[in-house]
Length: 181
Image 1 (cartoon, rainbow, N blue to C red):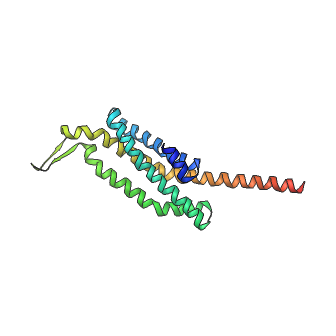
Image 2: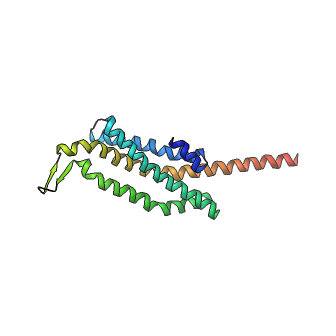
């Protein structure tokens, strides 16, 4: 359903596929994070973490690709300059989303529990153990996917621009040969 919505919004299968690759990258990050922390993947909390993470990561890619599409249409600059401008404009929002989410979930990842009534801080309390896997999934998946999103998405946009330029050049050469002959 997500793919259908993205294709209708962007009018491009490539953009939709590029956005959805972020979900795959974040899931890889979840498994790496659970491996590092030595936690098993639980379908309930780990799965909910992957689903919540998909929304954040997809949003980051949508912001990048939408800004790129808008800038390429408005300015008409070459793809490389537009990609650089897009990265400069959207780096801060993407990093702020990532950093605030990771810092907000860090107490849950570490199992820190604050009891406001008795004013005590406990580590590894039973109430915090339930949420540790969900928070770990989101933190590691988001960190991994954000780094890759900031590298892979602009690179894939440049690949698309290069392939488009190559096809136009090839079709132009064919057309010139056809009119000459």
